[in-house]
Image 1 (tube, rainbow, N blue to C red):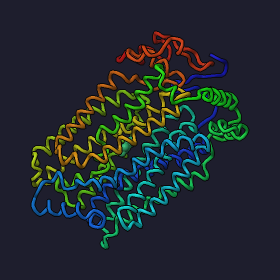
Image 2 (cartoon, rainbow, N blue to C red):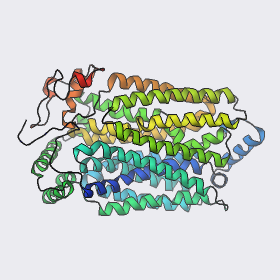
Image 3 (cartoon, rainbow, N blue to C red):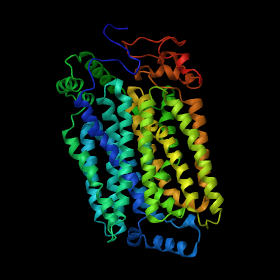
Image 4 (tube, rainbow, N blue to C red):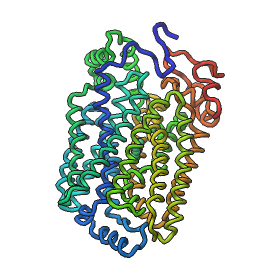
Length: 531
Ligand code: BGC
């Protein structure tokens, strides 16, 4: 090992410096990008369960709903409208397209301008939505919000990873997810309040208030410092060194600075990161960049996040009780996220994935059975209060399982497994697959509920089985493994090892090569159980 370089147990080299207030504050401001994403996720379901909103924009859905109530007809289908789902899902399609453009802006202009642009686009979208006169204005506003999400989600995780000292990268990463869950909860609470507004314009307040988190990120971004990595990449080397000293709170940054310069030069050698990522030696990372966000969405979580009030209404809850139940699931979502913050570096990712998956599956089976037992296939039934409360309880347990497994890990794991030369391409794939699958679920859920009925819960349950087996077999443990040594984890894996040639296994020039048989940092002891 080179003199003066320490490889810590928590991840990466241990460069001199500490978690300064400066960097902490910068990361908190940047993480508010998650707040905006969360607000969007939480707001649409509540708004689409408000009668004045339905009456104004989706009268046919409103009449169908009233009909269902009067005639006790099929509960499963009362919200099935392509236009209504388009309102929810248009945002994700826009975000998917925007994230590709955002990758370029983030690289060429710097991370802060992507965040700023995202925030401003959000603001305009929120204004359009709050003032909407017809469906076109409504959907246009949501597309603008989606572009904002695309830019924010591309830039924020990159910004956090680059600003954070290596030892705190995991913690700050889950800060992004925490902000997402807080955004969802705020939206649920706001919906609960605005639904009580007598004049029938409460939905306008809900939609327009997206301007608050938008303004926070837009104004905040103006004051955010650029990351040293981005400054170096854009040729501002002196500024970069000054910034690095400031964020690390020490003058002793020479070594980290040199490593950043080397990393930047190395990544510039890769002319085609998109073609590069297709090489066999990157197969494990490529598969994970696609599978993890896809599976995250196939847990069915956004059925709850988008449609909890609609779902609870389907169960026969009154308007108010539906929104209140959504607030309860929102609270569970926030608090359960702390479980992962505390345990992720101790228990490891795999244990959380496996435990969370098992818990989600059990809850899906119970919820599907309870709903099936009452509604059957006809969708006609009165559900007693106590019965509905038990359903909500199991939905909460399901949300908790997600909130400490696939929620945070769906963003954390992809961000920590890519070697530098394919990191940006990998991150783009991760974001866009996530948005695409979110779009599909948002668009397909209501028609699926109408056709599959309670079987839908078993459908997502079956996917949870698949993804849990996938994790058990194919995802190696990455806790406490320095990013620069991650290739050893893949090389040591029983399946992925075959894709990586011996000559591809090299770690940073001044890092000690751990022994292959496991008494170094990456070894059988740590990786035991899935070798
Ligand atoms: C997912 C979102 C989801 C949220 C729920 C995030 O990690 O990407 O799709 O709505 O978690 O908390």
